[in-house]
Image (cartoon, rainbow, N blue to C red; front, side, top):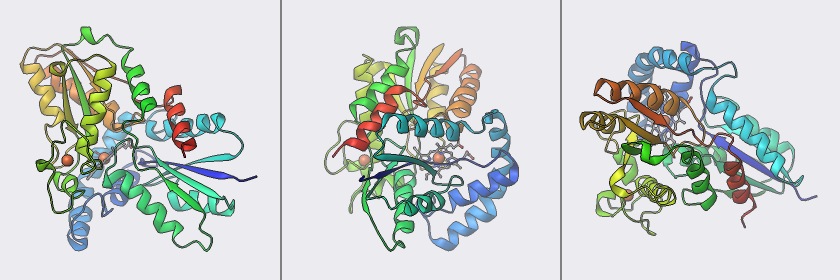
Length: 335
Ligand SMILES: C=CC1=C(C)c2cc3[nH]c(cc4nc(cc5[nH]c(cc1n2)c(C)c5CCC(=O)O)C(CCC(=O)O)=C4C)c(C)c3C=C
Ligand SMILES: [Fe+2]
Ligand SMILES: [Fe+2]
């Protein structure tokens, strides 16, 4: 039988919420040249001598809040997705899960796949919008490993699917649990990125010279900002949210030169304007994780309350939603 190996890849999470495991995770993550894209020596000094030593103890405290009996949500939801997708596919397909950082690692999972001698491998990162720091890095790592194989099978890599109808329908279905009319405003909060990295998808040009907030064209189709806005337009249309009732924003910045507006500032502004209830979608994440559960669910809730608001309602991520599994199946089976 012609067999295909399907490799799902998510970002990764520490092995445990201990300071040493969080340090080791942050060190692998932030030393990735697609994440901190500055010259090698500068990155080593900045990451290993400044960011990681200061951030690891603080992040470990946050991971301790996030951790459950089943471990880190990002990992256990991704594992569930792997099992559910396997159930949906025929015996021609074997589904694997790897994490870009920490475990299960891409080299270890690919080594298990190599031994199976698949005719075809489909690499499917669990990031709907392309960013060099997420999808680019995951695909780069796969190529680094496979490049050394003697037998290289047919390989298909999926770079993005932010506009896939079943992906949009899956997130819309999560949103339908809430009545939009009950909320003063809706936020679409995406993981942030340095503006410099967004500009790098353009050849000798800048994102600012394109109308990325309004349209996706052949020139900006890999611009993360453009695809985040496009995801939002598709979701807002499906859920009948008028343009004046929502704001696109970007969370988790490391400095001021990241994509704006910043989500925490938008939340603050909503409170100052007298809003009481806001609904937050986070469609760059397909599994709930530290960025959704803690940053939106806890930290933005606190900021909103401090500024007069009452409730920040996070829309649950896709996690193990049947439409998400259907979307992945359709991506795998697409020619
Ligand atoms: C949409 C996918 C993601 C992109 C793009 C991305 C870029 C990016 N991230 C950092 C720094 C950190 N991110 C952290 C956590 C984190 N990031 C993503 C996804 C993307 N990151 C996820 C799913 C998570 C949560 C992981 C989990 O265990 O739940 C963290 C760690 C947490 C912390 O200490 O705050 C850092 C650091 C950069 C610098 C970057 C692009 C340049
Ligand atoms: Fe991140
Ligand atoms: Fe752009």
